[in-house]
Structure formats: C-alpha cells, structure tokens
Image 1: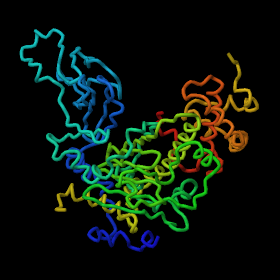
Image 2: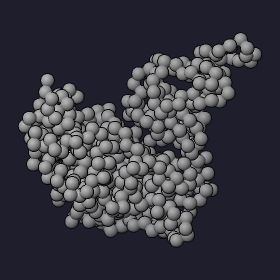
Image 3: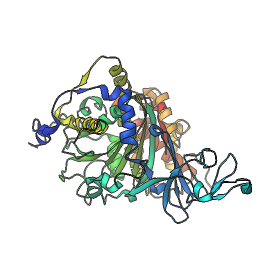
Image 4: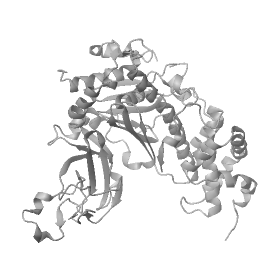
Length: 399
Length: 108
C-alpha cells in the first residue's frame, strides 16, 4: 500500500497542473457561463440517454438541452435506426412531441395537424394545395447529429460536429468497451434541481477527501479505513478532457445486518469481479469499490461489479443545475435478488443525498464574497484538472 | 384462493402490514420519514429475525407471479431495507441535514 499513501503522489505525476489555489470566479461568473454555453456545450457530444429505451420503431424520447435552449426529439425509425431532430414543426415553429417519452406511428403537430414520419419526413399537410411555396423535403424535421457508444446516446449541436463521438470519448472508447452494460437495466432514477453551478456539483463526485467526513454515518466505513484513512484513490488518470478515478474499498469494512442479508442473497456492490475490461479497476486491485469516469463536459459514468450509474449535470443558469442520477443493475431473478437490489438502491440513494447537501450553501457563499479561492489537496487534483480544461477551452488557451 | 393477508407461516407479522407493506420506494421513504425512531425500531426488530425465512420462502416463487399475500410479504421486506439505514447508521428516522428527499423525483 506504499504507493496509495505516497505524499504528493498526483502532483508528481501531473506537475504541469501546479498546486496553486483556484479562483472561484468560474462558479459565479455569468461571462464564464455564456462562454461555456458557446464554446463547450454547443460544440460537444452531450449525453441524452440509453438506447434500451428506444427498442422499437416509434419509441421516442424528448430532451430539453436548457443551456442551449434546444428541445431534442430522439426517435427510433421504421428502419430501427435512432435519429435526433429539433422537436419543432417546420410550419410555424410549434413543439411537436410533448411527452418526455412515448411511442407513436407518426408525429402530428397539435397546432394545424402537420404530420411527420418516424424518419422526420413531412408526410401530410392539411389543405396542402393552399400553400404556394411548400416543398415537403425542405420542411423535414431539422436533424441533429447523433451517435451511440455501447448503448449510450449522445447528440451534438455543432453543425457539423468537430470530432466523432468515439474520438471525443478517447481512451474510454477503448478502455470501457466490454463492460456488461447491456446486461443491466435501469432500476431507479433520482432527479432534482440544485441551486449551484454545474461545476460545483460535479466536483464532489471526483474526490474521496470528503468521504470520511460527509459520509461518516453511512459509507465512510466502506471507502476509508486504517490502511487509507483519507479515501485516497487506487488510481487516477487525467486525460486531455476526461478523467478516471478508481475508488478504494476498505477491506476491514464491517457490514450491517441488512447488508449481510442482502449480499447473502444477491449481488454485492463491494469488491471486484472477474471479466471486467482492463480499463475498469485498471490495477486489478482487490480493494476496489468502483471507477468514476468523467466524460467531458458533464457526464459521470460510474462502474462497479454489480451496477453502473450515470450522473448528468445540465446547466440551467450560472447558479442552477438540473441533476439526474440513473442506476442500472442486472434484473432480479427472485425475491432475494430483488431485496439485494433494493439494498443497493437505498444505500446509493442515502449516499447521494449526503453528496447533494453541500452545494447550495457553497454557491451562495461564493457569491457572497466570503472567499476568493479554493484550496485543493493532492487527491483533489481531478477538480484542478476539471477547472483547467474548462478554462483552457473557453479562453482559448493553447493546451 | 386464499384470503390471507400474509402467508400462514408469517401470520405473526400481520400487525405490520397496514403501515409497512408499501409497494413503492416513494411510499416507503415517506413512511420512514413520518415515523418515530421507536416505531421504526419496533418494525426493524420484528422483521430482522424473520428475514432469512422470508427470503427463502419467497425465493420459491417466480418473480412477478406472486399471489397478493406474497407481494405484501415482499413489500414488508423492502420496507425493512428502507428503514435499515435509519436504525443501523443514522439512529434517527432521517439523517439530520441530508438533502431533502421530497426534492428528489424518484422513478422506478
């Protein structure tokens, strides 16, 4: 364990990031927010959901990309292909699909009845002869670039996208491929709005320093212990824009009675399993809890033996973020597995509630002028990298 | 066709059914938060020693094809799981200062 607790382990590996305090401006500045909108969110691949919700022709989702003011329709066509469009009728701009999810054989605008097929083509216009200038192909729904990786659907509002999704995922496209995503289905979703900047909320999920304090009642015993009292990561990789953190599992963790029961009859969240791709628990450490993979700009994909989960952070304003957590686990085949699954859902939910409790105070305190900088310890280097990536992109610094 | 509230071998738990045999996470967390720690502890203490038996009994049945009495029993077990952090970790119905669960939209 000598390497785990090596002082300054990460600044030695990434000396170019420095060690200075970081100004708080990034979290309270409207100028930063506008630049993030135009230079990051308008140009990046943005995660919208998994394709297991769009299995049959006519299945659709709508997603509001609030920071860009765009309503997106994602729909499975008659040919089985998933496409994205602006969710807007080309007649006079009414919203086309109003539900967050649904199924339809065609899409009919509720204003004048214009009707589109599942591939976005305009198929029916009431009283069409009364239009002088109408060319149906011109009035097809406006497409949005969409690509899918391992069942994760991303869209890109930049026409055309600067890079492919695979290029943007970079090392993750290679390292995480083969994780059993398709064997797991969504078991619960938790969503809310947090009155804080999206980067403030994202920070907590990229460091273990908070674990012994904030999670003292619950999972601190699983994430810290005598061999690792501060919750240092097993490994940490900072890429060009993405990063991956491998989280420690305390081998001395004492399960509660409920946990012992749950894990006797169903899948445990604790400890590694064989057969995971090399990029997951890359050191093959037996004291492994899960990996946090931060996919630029605003998706965190956590992978463990028994589950994976996504955290999405959608900026609504400089001090307002829409947060959504979706948990995926293997379907329960009997009552015991169902009970274990519920245990995992509950313990993850209570941990998440602890994680969410600090951000609104922090945002208000930053705006109040109480502090000008934040200080980051060595194991908080992922946050340092995060701010640098955003800063470099929006201020056009050469990387 | 049985009109049992719970399977015969778990008749002794019938007193818990009205309060705790709840079919969704949203209902179960609301019940936990609305209960006193004494009520929660009494429920937890009543179910814990029976959990192994409950699980092995229910495991005999295919998921999703349960008679009503089994579904109630499963919901008691799920409520046991829901209250377990309150008893085992927080020692109160809901952790003081944690994010308000009423602000979470929970979808299963």
